[in-house]
Amino acid sequence: MILANLTTADLTERLTSRAGLALGIGPFHLRLTSDVAAITPLLQQLYRHYPLTDQVIRDFHLHLSGSALHRRWLRPQVQLLVDGRAPFEPLPAAHHLPALEWGMNWCIALRCNHLLMLHAAVVARGEHAIVLPAWPGHGKSTLCAALIHSGWRLLSDEFGLVRPADGALLPLPRLIPIKNAAVTALQTFAPSAEFGPTFYATRKGDLAHLCPPGESIAQSDQIARPRWLIFPRWQAGAALNLQPVSPTQAFLRVATNAFNYETLGGSAFTLVTEMVRSCNCYSLTYSALPAAVAALETLT
Image 1 (cartoon, rainbow, N blue to C red):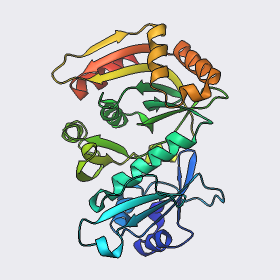
Image 2: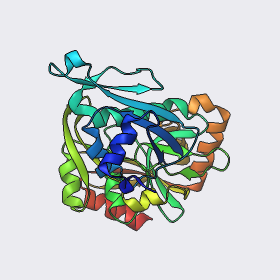
Image 3: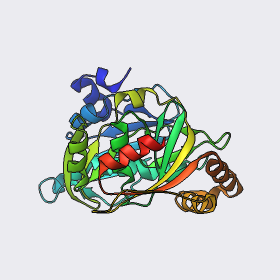
Image 4: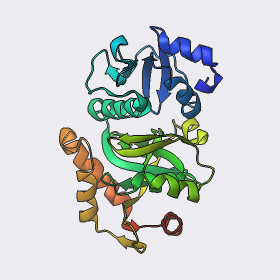
């Protein structure tokens, strides 16, 4: 059963009850409660493909709370609680979905050290995956979004989850936050791409969330193997440049883009070494999405 099977009344009841809304997102199970009415239609639109779960043990317990009564008319705010605590400052009430998404990122980054977590987008065809490690602002999410509208399956746009037992990549298909002018670029490249509303003047600029294809969410139990390591960088007006990267440089770039490399120590060293050995490694500078996607299609 998926969230789309719930009526608006059913969804509202779950969100406002103690039991909450139980969702499966990739390998994680979360419980969400909320008294913010505006989040309900966004969940219905953007989360409709995600499965409802009956797991007794949840990885994350999240509560999205609106302003106290005395603040509901003067600068209303929204607060995300994790396991009953508030690890973040309140945000403007209009930024309810970004608050929820950033909170999920925080939970994954701090609590999932049983996996090697790369700051990377990952897409796949069959079991062969492209891993796109990059720093924020280098265009990995935009390129990832273009690829999943060109026949690739989304594993993740933010966390490349590597299983220590065998180096497999675990799917975590979530909403893709697209910022500023990249929204228009993607809408031009893929007119069928489904975006939620634009949230203006967030701490990361103006952003809209791209809904993952239902097929990618339905295949959340299908692992992939790293086959290509591509280090992307978007640069305004730049000519397309796809160049091989040496294994030594690839290792350093992957290791420095891992959230928990130092935490996992020797295990992370072995996993990154095996990933580099099993992949063809390239750097990609681009400014135009059609040319970048065409270059990767030819390469792969």
